[in-house]
Length: 136
Image (tube, rainbow, N blue to C red; front, side):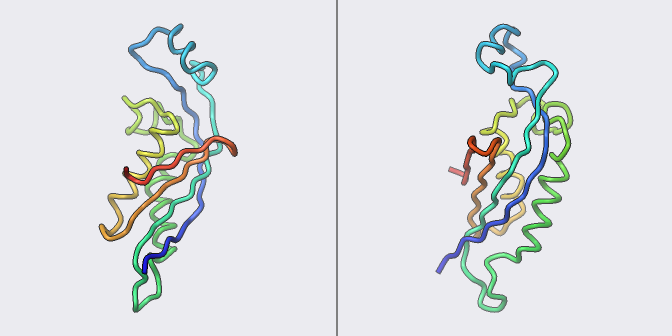
Protein backbone atom coordinates (compact mmCIF):
# COMPACT_ATOMS: atom_id res chain seq x y z
CA UNK A 1 0.00 0.00 0.00
CA UNK A 2 1.36 3.43 -1.00
CA UNK A 3 0.22 6.66 0.62
CA UNK A 4 0.89 10.29 -0.31
CA UNK A 5 1.71 12.88 2.36
CA UNK A 6 1.86 16.58 1.53
CA UNK A 7 3.54 19.57 3.17
CA UNK A 8 2.64 23.15 2.24
CA UNK A 9 5.29 25.85 2.29
CA UNK A 10 5.96 29.26 0.81
CA UNK A 11 8.62 31.75 -0.14
CA UNK A 12 8.70 35.27 -1.53
CA UNK A 13 11.06 36.03 -4.39
CA UNK A 14 11.74 38.47 -7.20
CA UNK A 15 12.64 37.54 -10.75
CA UNK A 16 12.76 38.75 -14.31
CA UNK A 17 11.81 36.65 -17.30
CA UNK A 18 14.22 37.29 -20.12
CA UNK A 19 16.82 35.72 -22.34
CA UNK A 20 20.24 37.31 -22.47
CA UNK A 21 20.59 36.39 -26.14
CA UNK A 22 17.40 38.27 -27.14
CA UNK A 23 16.94 41.99 -27.66
CA UNK A 24 15.01 44.04 -25.13
CA UNK A 25 12.21 44.35 -27.68
CA UNK A 26 11.92 40.60 -28.21
CA UNK A 27 12.00 39.94 -24.44
CA UNK A 28 9.23 42.52 -23.97
CA UNK A 29 7.22 40.99 -26.82
CA UNK A 30 7.45 37.44 -25.43
CA UNK A 31 7.45 38.01 -21.65
CA UNK A 32 5.58 41.34 -21.41
CA UNK A 33 5.74 43.12 -18.06
CA UNK A 34 7.38 40.02 -16.55
CA UNK A 35 10.52 41.14 -18.41
CA UNK A 36 10.72 44.42 -16.44
CA UNK A 37 14.46 45.22 -16.12
CA UNK A 38 13.79 46.21 -12.49
CA UNK A 39 12.32 42.75 -11.71
CA UNK A 40 8.99 41.88 -10.05
CA UNK A 41 8.02 39.49 -7.28
CA UNK A 42 5.64 36.76 -6.22
CA UNK A 43 4.46 35.17 -3.01
CA UNK A 44 5.04 31.58 -4.08
CA UNK A 45 3.08 28.79 -2.42
CA UNK A 46 4.03 25.17 -2.87
CA UNK A 47 2.82 21.71 -2.03
CA UNK A 48 5.45 19.01 -1.70
CA UNK A 49 3.99 15.50 -1.88
CA UNK A 50 5.89 12.33 -1.05
CA UNK A 51 4.43 8.94 -1.92
CA UNK A 52 5.64 5.64 -0.56
CA UNK A 53 4.93 2.60 1.54
CA UNK A 54 3.95 3.08 5.17
CA UNK A 55 6.83 2.04 7.41
CA UNK A 56 5.63 -0.79 9.66
CA UNK A 57 7.61 0.47 12.66
CA UNK A 58 6.81 4.20 12.56
CA UNK A 59 3.56 4.28 10.61
CA UNK A 60 5.08 7.07 8.46
CA UNK A 61 5.73 7.38 4.75
CA UNK A 62 8.22 10.07 5.77
CA UNK A 63 8.55 11.89 9.07
CA UNK A 64 6.86 15.26 8.38
CA UNK A 65 9.45 17.04 10.54
CA UNK A 66 12.17 15.68 8.24
CA UNK A 67 10.20 16.86 5.19
CA UNK A 68 9.60 20.28 6.79
CA UNK A 69 13.29 20.69 7.58
CA UNK A 70 14.30 19.55 4.10
CA UNK A 71 11.98 22.09 2.45
CA UNK A 72 13.32 24.82 4.73
CA UNK A 73 17.01 24.07 4.16
CA UNK A 74 16.85 23.29 0.43
CA UNK A 75 14.15 25.69 -0.78
CA UNK A 76 13.01 28.34 1.67
CA UNK A 77 16.50 29.29 2.88
CA UNK A 78 17.79 29.30 -0.71
CA UNK A 79 14.91 31.19 -2.39
CA UNK A 80 13.03 33.27 0.22
CA UNK A 81 13.43 37.04 -0.14
CA UNK A 82 15.95 36.55 -2.93
CA UNK A 83 16.24 37.80 -6.47
CA UNK A 84 16.20 34.47 -8.29
CA UNK A 85 18.11 35.78 -11.32
CA UNK A 86 20.93 37.22 -9.25
CA UNK A 87 21.13 35.37 -5.94
CA UNK A 88 20.17 31.78 -6.75
CA UNK A 89 22.94 29.92 -8.63
CA UNK A 90 20.54 27.53 -10.41
CA UNK A 91 19.08 30.51 -12.32
CA UNK A 92 22.34 32.13 -13.37
CA UNK A 93 21.78 30.82 -16.91
CA UNK A 94 18.23 29.47 -16.58
CA UNK A 95 15.18 31.68 -17.12
CA UNK A 96 13.26 31.56 -13.80
CA UNK A 97 9.84 30.76 -15.23
CA UNK A 98 7.43 28.91 -12.95
CA UNK A 99 8.12 25.81 -15.04
CA UNK A 100 11.88 26.03 -14.50
CA UNK A 101 11.50 26.93 -10.81
CA UNK A 102 9.35 23.85 -10.08
CA UNK A 103 11.87 21.57 -11.82
CA UNK A 104 14.74 23.08 -9.79
CA UNK A 105 12.77 22.66 -6.55
CA UNK A 106 11.92 19.06 -7.43
CA UNK A 107 15.55 18.26 -8.29
CA UNK A 108 16.91 19.76 -5.07
CA UNK A 109 14.41 17.78 -2.96
CA UNK A 110 14.62 14.57 -5.01
CA UNK A 111 18.36 14.32 -4.37
CA UNK A 112 17.71 14.24 -0.61
CA UNK A 113 14.95 11.59 -0.56
CA UNK A 114 15.16 7.81 -0.47
CA UNK A 115 14.86 6.26 -3.93
CA UNK A 116 11.74 4.27 -2.99
CA UNK A 117 9.80 7.52 -2.42
CA UNK A 118 8.04 9.36 -5.24
CA UNK A 119 7.99 13.15 -5.25
CA UNK A 120 5.62 15.71 -6.74
CA UNK A 121 5.87 19.48 -6.35
CA UNK A 122 3.06 21.92 -7.11
CA UNK A 123 4.19 25.56 -7.27
CA UNK A 124 1.68 28.41 -7.19
CA UNK A 125 3.05 31.61 -8.69
CA UNK A 126 -0.35 33.23 -8.10
CA UNK A 127 -3.53 31.75 -6.66
CA UNK A 128 -4.71 31.04 -10.22
CA UNK A 129 -1.41 30.15 -11.96
CA UNK A 130 0.43 27.04 -10.91
CA UNK A 131 2.71 24.32 -12.26
CA UNK A 132 3.23 20.72 -11.23
CA UNK A 133 6.24 18.42 -11.66
CA UNK A 134 6.80 14.83 -10.66
CA UNK A 135 9.94 13.99 -12.59
CA UNK A 136 8.35 12.97 -15.86
